Image 1 (cartoon, rainbow, N blue to C red):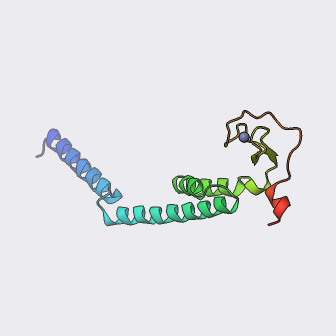
Image 2: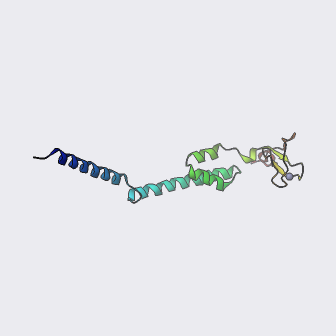
Image 3: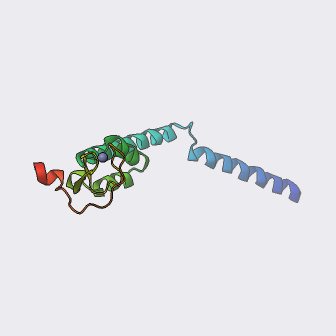
Amino acid sequence: MRSASTTASARTTESLSSAARRAARRGGRRSPLGTLRAVAYLIVAFSFALAGGIVGKIKGSSFFIWFLVSGFLPGIGLLAAVLYRYERDELRRQCPTCGKVLKLHDQVCNRCGTDLDFPEVAIEPESAAYGR
Ligand SMILES: [Zn+2]
């Protein structure tokens, strides 16, 4: 006849081993399925990064920045790149100190460092000046 304590300890051992089995099935980094998933994720992230970078570049922005944003936030980054403004469509202005043509939204001249007030006259955007 089995005592109650033996039954209880047997049950504990049983549940522990099943928990271990479940953990093993879930797969850590060592399991081939986990590695496959990580590689698949990297491929997807890289594709998004590339797409985001290209979209950013087409819009006259930095390929590298949009590559990083889209790579770290697959989907969201690409969406942001798609929704981001076209640099070529931005109105421009001229720096009163050195004469450099800047984007209207620039607040400091990137050539001479002059603080810029909002101008009274704007220059038409590149896309309108040169066509696409
Ligand atoms: Zn300037």
